[in-house]
Image (cartoon, rainbow, N blue to C red; front, side):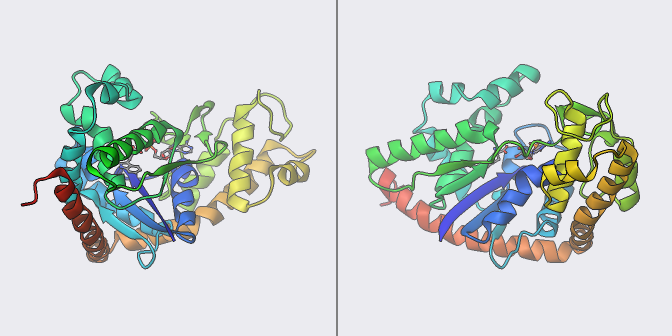
Length: 326
Ligand code: AMP
Ligand code: TRP
């Protein structure tokens, strides 16, 4: 089986957009690849974090992925900071990467343009990500479009290291998720659903209960016009149709057909029930895991143990290649 690896920042909750866009595709990879899923806590601290919050967020991220269907019997779920080899390899790769290469990374440029004074960690973030990937002979890296450039850097560093020190790393391939899985805000069809939005009405959190889901969907904006039909100029109703389709597995056309001549009210009521049914079991599992911190810690410790064995093996080889092993 091919190995795939992905990393997700620990956050306190995920919304339905994260689930459809990022977590679901990772869960699907469990069946045909050996998946490694990493909670990238050391990437998270490139931006200021409250230590108490960070700890809570790591636990709730793990509960969320497990609740979403990440199966520890198949997938190595672990915390990045538990495997010190990531930092060691990141240092070596920093000595392979060129300043100009790192300076070209657009996420750093964007983030530092917004923030006051970026940390050195934010600058070297993509090199730590390259270490995450290269430590495990990763072949496939499922990511969003915004991370493609970082995976390409990992490829370049692997190729250069192999050329200069001898064959050591597998050169990874990014697997960019198909577009169309972009879920828009419920209160503005032109903006991406985001948890940093000012109003909680704009997103559906995976932990929202049935009542909250119903209220949010009933108050979702729709565009002018009455027809329930996808249309480039009517992003709000198009988005609701997308969510309906994903939640039920029905095609958008069949849903459009079912609502010909019906109003937004009926449509939204049915959509709300479809989403309640879709997320209900996931929410239940997330809350169950979240209530059992001991079990989460056990799963993460087991994942770290497995990852550590693989990483230690690779680092032995890397140290020899570099010439520091006596
Ligand atoms: P974020 O926390 O915004 O960085 O998102 C984490 C992951 O979820 C990224 O891989 C995003 O591509 C994905 N994601 C975030 N928001 C959405 C959305 N509204 N629709 C689809 N995918 C999303
Ligand atoms: N930088 C990625 C993001 O922000 C997270 C990440 C860290 C990652 N290490 C990784 C993704 C390794 C894939 C593989 O989304």
